[in-house]
Amino acid sequence: MAFKVPDDITLCLNEDRGREFLERIWNKKAAYCCVIGNTETAKIPGVSAAGADPAATDFTPAADMELLYFGRCKCIDGVPITPSGIPTPGIITMSALKLAPMPIFVVNGGVRVRPHVPCIDVDGTAGDDIRTGKAVKGAEKAYDRALVAGRQLAKMVDYLVVGESIPGGTTTALGVLTALGYDASGKVASTFPVNPHELKAQVVAEGIAASGLSPEALKNDAMAAVQAVGDPMMAPAAGLIAGAAESIPVLMAGGTQMAAVLAIIRSMDDTVLDNLALGTTRWITEDKTSDLRGIVSQIGNVPVMAANLNFSLSRYDGLQVYETGLVKEGVGAGGSAIAAMAATGGKVTCRSLLDEIEKNYTRLVSRR
Image 1: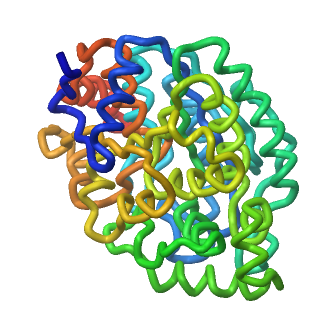
Image 2 (image 1 turned 90 degrees about the vertical axis):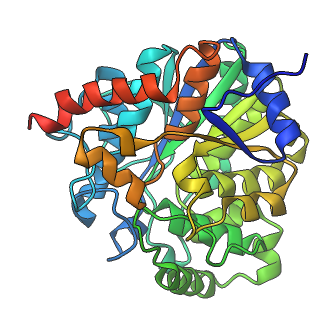
């Protein structure tokens, strides 16, 4: 009998492979790993809403990781919020990992504020503004170190779930996808309901021009592309995923930022693509201002699936507003929700996950 995909998960691209992937991870043991970083690109006005103001984006990845480990943040009061007060999607990931406990690992790709949690260090540093054309230092070293970590983590579990937290990451995703020769114009997502595509395209064009590298040089060297117009999350995420996927399935938890990581993996080691899938939220796959399917279909025959989270049913305005197109994804929210369903054989549902999210929202946000 063919594996039946639950209604709470939608197969969005390469459906047969997506069904096979889900069957492989169903009722299996997973670990969750998040790659964090900071980039000065996030401080360009209008680029990111992943913080109360541009300066606050330095604290967002650290606070997200503390939320996962401790159920509260230590480096800031409360939780990371958008300028309009909407809480981090890390609240979704935290809730999913509480309902389906799995080991949590953090890879520090390069942050300005270190979280109060243990980290796997790849000797990375925080990224510069991509308009300099010199956005990241030591990308290949970070990739190689994370590759080793991925191979080791793969020995512990049946599959790995890999998310990210880096404000400004959709702009750097556009940068790397463009540098690698993909048509990503108007296709990357945004934390804002109105996607600032023109601003992102202008920033990327400035960065590519400032890099001094030819289109051919960038297209044929993924690490050069990352160093020119990427961010410090990308190389270690690609290495971690590629290392683990040599032997086990890896669910890449995220949207168009993870699509950029997928493009890097294809350039570095396309033999692992058969072990990969992208898991995201329906807010990304239904987003009319971006095109995750259009990006991934250019890269390889990798399935895309979405958790059918629906916050219109929530009693909290701060969660209901997700349905308007704010935030959409981050900290591996969609992938962690799918993993929670898979790890429990479908006992965790979008409804039970919303109940847990609301409990945590009550504790963390509504009583502030």
